[in-house]
Image 1 (tube, rainbow, N blue to C red):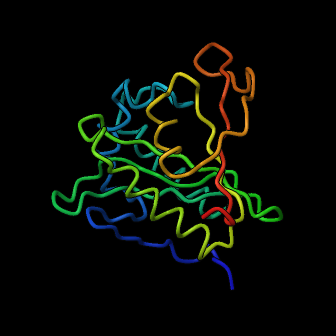
Image 2 (cartoon, rainbow, N blue to C red):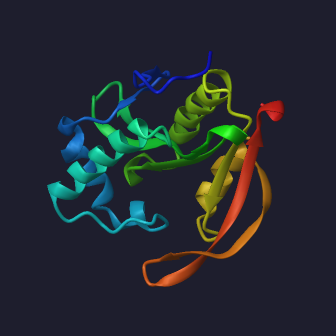
Length: 183
């Protein structure tokens, strides 16, 4: 039996607890998304209030209830601070296909932390959810994100030209994918 979207899955890695976002995480999420560097390549405006953070937590609940996605907060096991998020959106059950997304506080960049967190949720998608294909859509300028998915053995499929209208302009997205047969 596949994943049922009843209880939100809690996952653990060596350094992190990946869990459901809760209201008590709003301060950490506000700090995360109030940083221009974090939202630079996201279809998200810089947070300017705690209400924005609460909306974000509510959105995590909504996509889970609608069974179209899962978003984990990444809690640093040592400090118990939420330092980023990762998860899935655009779950297409009939095709067993899902899109991955992630973000991390800049002071934690370049330390292999996101690779650790994503390895865990990729394992979850292929083993518990019955996913066949995980997609990543990344702006071409976001070279660190591209390097990350390449380290996780994603393959480049091509470029979706002027695929989204974000922050007043059309942006290209490079599409990468990982198949269960390659995992």
